[in-house]
Structures are given as structure tokens and as C-alpha cells.
Image (cartoon, rainbow, N blue to C red; front, top):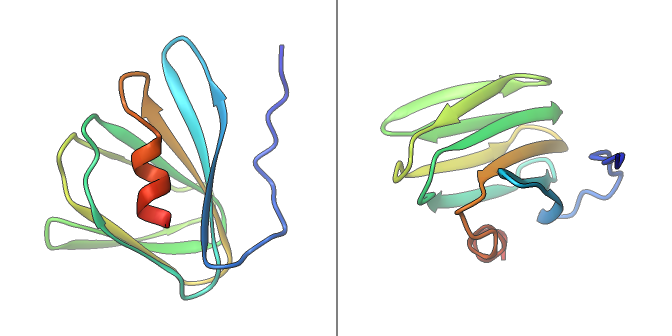
Length: 109
């Protein structure tokens, strides 16, 4: 058993770190400072995004939704999307085992 800590107090721009990789998924913590932005990008496999702290605007396919603390959204493979932090935010990104997390690190720069 391993305890995974998603909490962080560092909010500078957009940062991502892989916290765990299991037999079936990869869990990434994305921290976003207020007003920071993740530009449009796509995932090659389905993803799950959950806000653990703060609030973001999630845009995809001409739709926009506000996600607040503990809200969760799923997204199919190949759908272009972007994120805007309305306040300092911590996001849990769940990737498929077949997805390469290095593409996430390229998006956050």
C-alpha cells in the first residue's frame, strides 16, 4: 500500500507531476496558479479530470463548463480541450496506461 499526496502549496503557472502509475492507469497532479492557462491539446486515449482544490473553466468542442472542488469530467480520446484556472487549483488527471504522460509535461511547458 502506498499513500499518494495530491496536496501542494506551490502555485506558479502550470506544473504537472506523475504521482503514481498502476497496472491500469497513471495519476498526474496538475497545479495551476490563478489565471494560468493550458492551451488547446488532445489526449490519445480517454481521460478523467477532477478538481481537488480551486476552480477551473474547462473548454472542449465549443462547450465551456466550470469545475469546482471535487467536480469531475470525462473526455473521449482525440477531443481538443483547454483549461483556465479561476483560482489556485489542484487537478487530478487520470490517464490510461497506454497514454504517454510526457505529452502532458509538454503542454504545461
